Length: 177
Image (cartoon, rainbow, N blue to C red; front, side, top):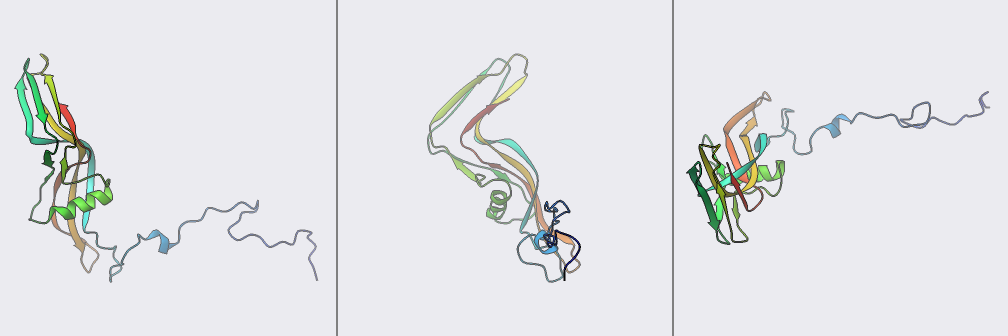
């Protein structure tokens, strides 16, 4: 009819003896990234893999000036001026694929081109302690390595194209060295 224990309450599922929940490892199904699964059981094919991301200044080559020690450098730009990032690759492909992957992986503010929304100018004197210097319009952005590929039947990643990129993310910015 009953047991000799006064507390004959069933133990809560996933609870320790003290009633607190036991931390659970994710199920195998939820540990896999969402998306299609390769027929061979390999990870899904990413279109572009992005690695070695670093914050950097992305300068406009047409708005960069150079000078030696003691020279005052200046740069100015009108509202509406556009400059682009730099993408290198082994074989020609659409830059939009790399930019879209960077937007998804790094930040949505990354783009291939930026346009100034204001007119601005700046000047800087190359210090005596420096032999040469530069002053440039550009923006803070990101540099990274990228590769495009797919998995073969043996689940080995095969690279079909690769390169580097330096893309603007914020606009505008004047830097010097």
